Image (cartoon, rainbow, N blue to C red):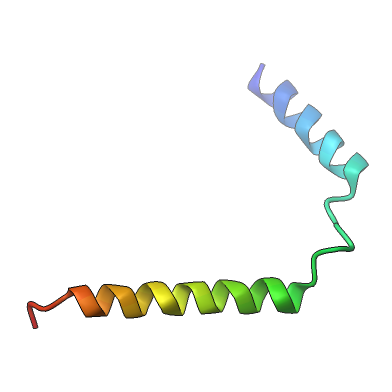
Length: 50
C-alpha cells in the first residue's frame, strides 16, 4: 500500500516539474543564509553562560 502511494507521489512530482520560474535560487539561498546568521547571532546573544 505504501509503495503504491509513493509511486503516485513520484508521478505527480514528475507531472508538475517541481520548478517555479519566480523563485530565484540566489535570492532564496541568500535569504536562507541571512536568516540563519540572524538566528546564530540571537542564540549567541542569549547564551551568557560562557
